[in-house]
Length: 248
Image (cartoon, rainbow, N blue to C red; front, side, top):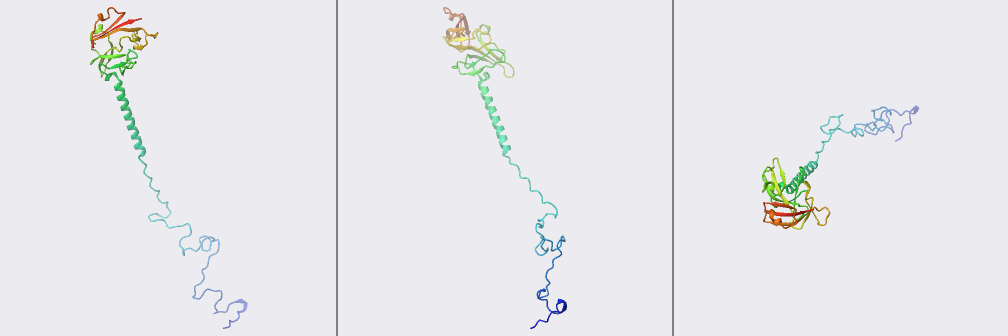
């Protein structure tokens, strides 16, 4: 079939299909707006809206969120209780340690001592506390002869006896009657002192000021020291003991 020549002026004849027009079926080609008009199709980088959903970067809000509002902040995680457990555990340890220290302190205190136990006394002065010690320890310089329930009670033999004393008043009141923890042949320093505790020293030690030349258990009498070099006598009625002491 022949194609009629074009109309004057380059116009397509009326009624003839445009070879460059829309495809058959009457659907016109989609037109784009003028470049540079915001919000209109055809803006550079903006594809047509409505065919594939909202423009890039814009998404519908999640369920339960009002458009234009930020999503709620995530809940704050609960803090671990490890710190509290450790802290209480440390407190428990401190309490246990304090209890142990208290027990040790009490076991070394003269309050827990009885007759026959030995003490270490550095000073026979107010405020100086003796401590319990094994009787074979060189520092154990006195032995408890009698323990009285009241600080106001007198030791056996009264002022004529040779006891040293340690008294405690207050809620816990008691008195300890003390005898020298030494045997025949031992030498001492501080025997003549009114306040310092006895110290066992070698007999060749220049600090020595006394020597026990005779010690008799089972007797409490000055006559035991007759015929000895003793210049001082310590008599203990309970348990009956006599110590004959030679001083420098």
